[in-house]
Image (tube, rainbow, N blue to C red):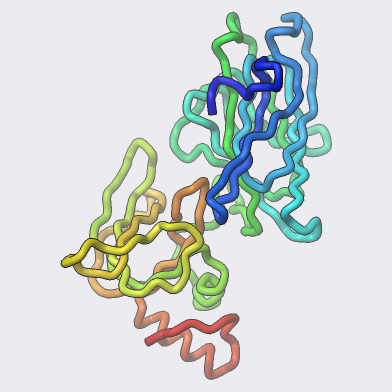
Amino acid sequence: MGPGLQGGDGASLPVGERCSDARAGVSRLTSLPVHSGLTHEAHRKEVEQVYLRCSAGTVEWMYPTGALIVNLRPNTFSPSRHLTLCIKPLRGSSGANIYLEKTGELKLLVRDGDLGPGQAPCFSFEQGGLFVEATPQQDISRRTTGFQYELTSRHAGPDLHTLSAPCRPCSHTEVLLAVCTSDFVVRGSIQDVTHEPEQQESAIHLNVSRLYRQKSRVFRPAPEGEGGSWRGRVSTLLECGVRPGRGEFLFTGHMHFGEAWLGCAPRFKDFQRMYRDAEERGLNPCEIGTE
C-alpha cells in the first residue's frame, strides 16, 4: 500500500484498511473516513471510532494525533464463535501506542517504536477492543502507524503473545485434534534447521513425502531428481531449540500473518500408534491415512 489510500478526488485518506483473504489469494482496499491528523489543532485530543469489517487485513493511520477506538465487526464469523484477535505492527510503524481496551481499562500491547521480535500479541476477542493513542511528536507529517490483524477461532495463550505453547510436546488428544483442525498436515522429514536470532525464530526446512492438507501453498513440488515429493519451511520459536532429527514426523500447524507456524509434530510411528488406539476405541475426531 502506498503512503495513503486515495479518495475519489485524489486526496489522501489518513486511515485505510486492506482486507485479506488468504484462501482466495486476494486483497482489497477499504477507506475508513477519519479526519487527518494534519487538520487537527495540536492541543486537541480527539478520539475517533473506526469499524473493521474484514476477518484479516492491514490498517494504516497517517499523521496520528489524538486516538482511535478500533471496533471489529467481521461479517465472516458467527457471533457465537470464540475468536482470537492477533495484531502485528508494520515495519517502520511509529507515532502511537496500541492498547487492549476493556470497560475503560487499558493494557499496553505495543509501545511506540518497539518493533522487536515477537511483537504479534493475541487475545480473546471477548476481552475487549483496540485503543490506538498517538504519542506526542514534534513533526507528525512523517509518521504513520500501521498494523496487520487477523481473527482466528484458535485460543490465545495465557501471555497474550502466542496462540499456543509451541515448545511443549502435544498430548495424544492434542495431536489427534491437530490432524483435523490444522491449516497444514504433512508427513515428512527435517532437511535442515536455520536460526534467525534477530527475529527469535527458527526455520524448519522439510522434505514432505505425503501431503494431507494445506490451505496455502506452503509446500511445493520438489525439483526433479531431489528426494521428497514436496518442499517447504515452517517456523517456530528459537527458544524451542529445534534441531535436525532422523526419521519421519507428522507435522501440523497454522498460518499466522502469511507464514506457516509449527504446531504438533510427533514422530510418525508414534502418531500411527496413538491413531490406531483411538480408532479402536472410537475416539478419533476425524479420519486420516496412516500407512
